[in-house]
Image (cartoon, rainbow over all chains, first blue to last red; front, side, top):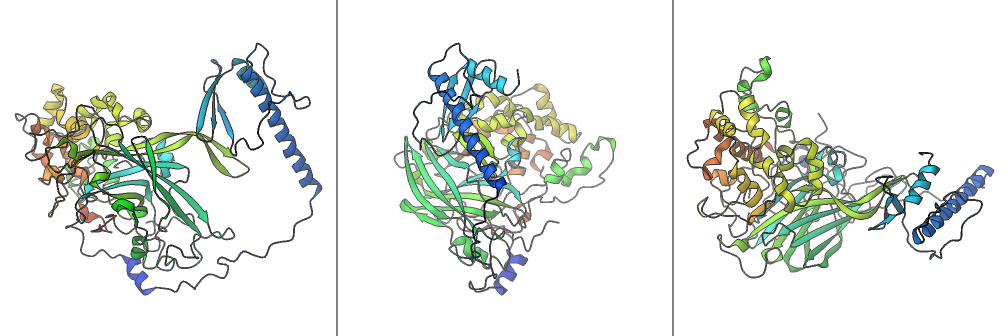
Length: 142
Length: 463
């Protein structure tokens, strides 16, 4: 295959590797040994508040999703509402385990109202200018 | 380089950046072909503690066209998975790794190989182990045999390997990208009036101590050819076109909670490679990333970049008086049918005695291999230009001197194949960056996966 390959294929690492063959049992002290588990820390007020904030964010996201679903199902002149955290709109029924990963919406051009929606390895395209407008308002971009 | 960091976007994404494709009849196993796709350019061997690995979020593919339409008829897909054995250490390994199931090896990769043909997918192997990177004599003693144990044998006589290898491609990057300096002839360079060089110099292999990651397959011919026996050189069915692609999911979101990029959506191609230097040298900077996203069957759009290559115009300008015949050819605006045949259609019968690797009129950048031509017993790294029909551009072997071959072709040495009245410049047959396969310190292997043992981090620190 390689007639002009240099006769000396070795290089310092290889030469030394033959000299330095070491038994598999030689390991660093912490190898493979997980440290003893620490006892659970008492929850601080701050951590509890942080947890509440996360729950709130999830609720807001769910409400936003519901608004999106309604808007997508029944496109009307009414702009979809994305900020009804205090008054969530009726949610379309969704399985709790609909999908494990995120949905990502990409709007390449806000003027045409097209949303590319990605989930898992799939994609779909939705035409909803009202939702795009509402998103822009929420982001204070218009 | 061949295709290392060849386009602006992919240069920021090394794990998805294809660097070289090789396709050749296996010299030690007649009746099989070896296909290799390299990724992750310019790996500094000492790059720990997070040593190099394939992208778990990248879909790697090697495609084979066997009927001349430049569409994939057989595709081999590779998906990788990284696992951490010990989440309480920052180390890649916590002791010597002497086997692929070593408990000392913390960050390891396995992979799945899937064959797609005729709309059907079949998993050929899963949970196949990659070898570790070559770290040094304490961490990876006896590395050559350790890596050899990661050559997996699959059903139907298929061999597969995925892991680190020594870079087999050699090129004098430092000079070439310094305004086209070719050190052996640098005294003839225009030098823009600066008079920097008074004599020629030996080439310097910029990849001499660097590694890559290879995906290598050794396949019985019936795995890649269309039905029936194709053992005659003139048989169109004996020619395959090979290329590799890497794809990422369309949307990528930085998940700050996980500290990770999350890929979502369909996989879309971000990297493509067949012939060395195609995208690198022929495609303009503004189109390189787009080219990476396209299928080869659409390369007609770029045909003018091949038939009127920018480099052919640069050579007479950079080396005044050295390439007068090439300059005259350029001045006439002659389309380079020789380059179109070599890179976009394959060479038809009747051009080179006893040879063809023509896939038909579809213009596509494919690595074309006539599988009926046996491996050479006395290979010439200059391939077909050097009279060795088993070498580039009939496929590509790991040691082929593709830089010199393509430089000479662009300089005009292959024009007489299509225009016998043309006399190449004397320099066209000599032009080179001054390197040979002996410029690769690791050498090459005589057996699968043929690329040399990777340089270890211990012995090759960055200079």
